[in-house]
Length: 84
Image (cartoon, rainbow, N blue to C red; front, side, top):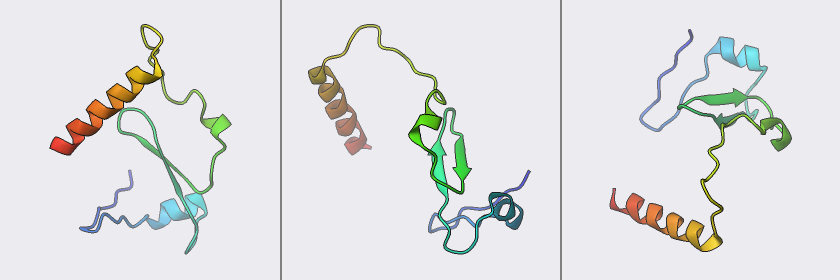
C-alpha cells in the first residue's frame, strides 16, 4: 500500500510509483471519479460517460418522482447544509 498525506491546503503529493503507473508528468491532468463507499478512482485521462455507466448501484425510487418533489427535496437539503 502506498500512502500520502493531505497538506493544510488540501494538497496531496502523488507518490512517484503512482505517477509512473499513471504515466503522468508535470502539468498533466488527472481525474478523480467518486465511487461508492468513500472510494475514488484516479485516472490520467478523461473517461467517456458511457464507460462509467453501471459503476454505481442505483436505488430506484419506490414511485415516480415529480419535478416539484425533486425541487422540494433539493431545497430541504440545501437548507440543512446551510445550518451545518
